[in-house]
Image 1: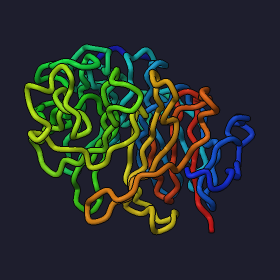
Image 2: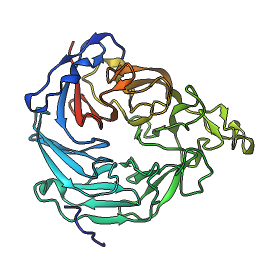
Image 3: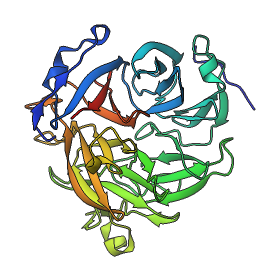
Image 4: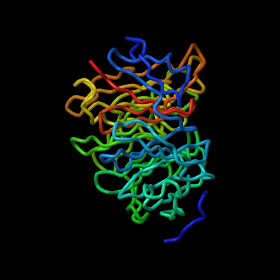
Length: 370
């Protein structure tokens, strides 16, 4: 292997906030959650984007956090009570190292055209090893160039590549979800017609992948919806750039292929909400109605006349179908001004939910108590 140089929702009740002194943020008391839920500022991480959980044992564990603007990867060590204890810098100077994934003691990090790996990372948090190059064969575009990473139940590393534009016919290397072997070999397309996915997860019951997709811009305030998609098998096409939200032909490209050629979304999300990280809720701390549902970080609109998103939403499933879509964590948006923007969610082994906020530079922990 080659080495590279080290880069050394309801508004049902106002939140009860448990804010540690080391991570105080006066804006957090404006958040809202359903009754019985509590939030705390769990850790401060600059420009926090995707999160990945490392090994967890009786002494605690490690959370790895990517970034986009900050260009660095951090680790947060937590104790057996799931309380954050200390931050470590794993790498700096990387190009949009948004995606992080953990496997067999090693940390994988995306950096636009490259994926690198930090071997034995938890044994070397104080002095991280030089990163090993896994692949440098991904696209180099920075427009939609940040790449969420995750290992699937098949042991493959899944990597999306967004379209390098708002709307275009980008070619086979773009607008897709691909997968590869852990060593970077065997790259193959799993799904296509995906404008920009920045979050995906596997149903723990069926082992099938679900993913968010950001809809195109410049069709007005209310079109098209962002999408939550379901891909039970390889080879499916989800419409981009010909059809949006399953039923809206693109004004420029829609005449080339009808919407009926493509797989419609499992759930239409809000228009321009910028749906990013998503996870199935696999814990038991939350009430039964949340178990097996999907939490989605909606980063928030940038070009809508009245802002949308800036929240965490919940999609509930029944028999593999989406049956409800509703706000869960709100309050980041005050009028038309946002003090925070959710970017990812992750379930801890105790059943609490972490929410990354790349604008406030924080990770919140959501717990429930009757």
